[in-house]
Length: 68
Image 1: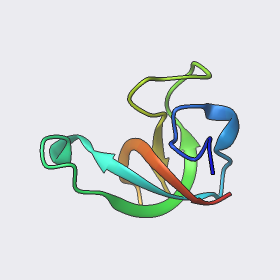
Image 2: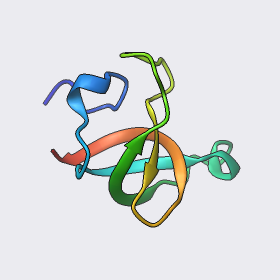
Image 3: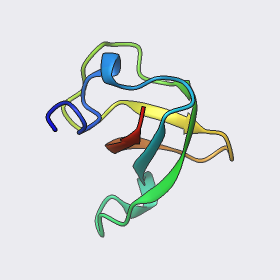
Image 4: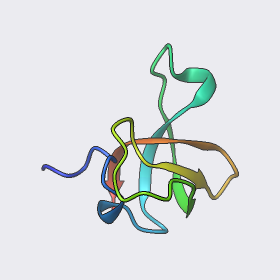
């Protein structure tokens, strides 16, 4: 399914279940699963993924949308 890569803000909603990459994990590419609490990227598109804060407080860029 296209549009699930997290680069377009319109594909992500508050409450969506996503995989993010934390800043400290960018080199390894380790992904963290969570629920979107808020958007931190202002623009509608970002080539490395929209930056979000998860409900547990972790911050990272969306790599994949699991459930909208």
